[in-house]
Image 1 (cartoon, rainbow, N blue to C red):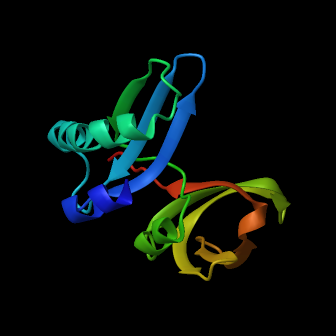
Image 2: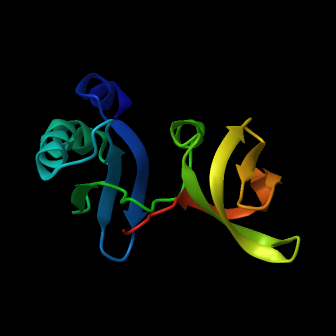
Length: 140
């Protein structure tokens, strides 16, 4: 899929399979966000190659192409790098300094940990302690 996505300026963020509904969902992003037209264009571009791969062994399935949404969790190094110096929300598996939720500026990412600047302090948090991290969504 990357060989089709990259020339189109599209990043494949995730691919999800739902057994119950037989749905294959491809989540995509671009520098300028994802419109319905971009989803349709990418859907049409990957439909035949995916059918050739036959991911369901001739069973019927539905192919969906979608934006992962504004509050999608970071999954790749690129997600972290793209959000450096931006506000993020961090949910932890276990408390650090008595808290399992932090919001702040993502200062650094080194592949193993992040540095987060909150209103009161800077915290270095190992990635394996983070349950979910995503861009902070502010409504003004």
